[in-house]
Amino acid sequence: MTRPPLYLVRHGETHWNAEGRLQGQQDTPLNATGVAQAGEAGRRLAAILNGEAARAAYVASPLTRTRRTMEGLRAALGLDPGAYALEPRLREIGFGAWEGMTWREIRRADPARAAARDRDRWGYCPPGAGAESYAMLVERVRPVLDALGGPTVMVAHGGVARAILVALGRATPAEAPHLEIRQGRVLVLDAAGHRWV
Image (cartoon, rainbow, N blue to C red; front, side, top):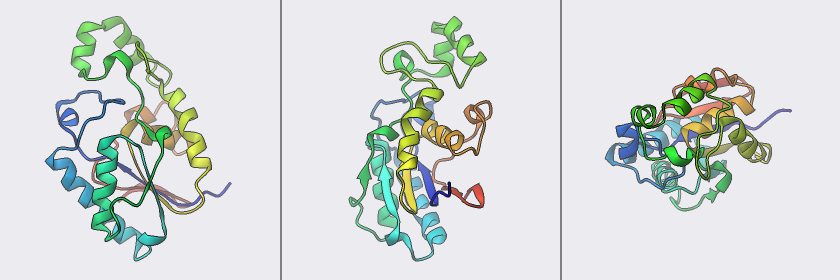
């Protein structure tokens, strides 16, 4: 099946990103660096889309950090900042009871579960309400990908990006949890493969 081009942007930096805290589905805002990264992503998209930015579809996770990133990049493209769709299935992976903690804190407070997750980063589901494994996340985001009808700019999260790479056959479940998902850059997924711009 031939898929339309997807331009995937991870939200800009938050204070929790800077502190190494798992955000999951917590609604954290962008910091000043994140606001700048949103504009940078828009400038990168302008170069990639080469005058066709108004023809693409735009969709974002409903969390504040992704909405603000989308609005910043659309402003940088000269488009109405608020004219985009929200897709709840693009929310970040749920880390349950671990949200708000750093990995160091998790390893100290819950060493057995942290070790179990280290052994199976793709399939492990953390403790607590709303927690998900990456395998579960793929099933949540796959229908969104299947419904894309044309070139799409998507603003989502690091975990969602990893799930998309696996769903599209661009990474294996063993590789994906270890990939760097960059902020302020655009991951282009098209017929030529995938690349960061």
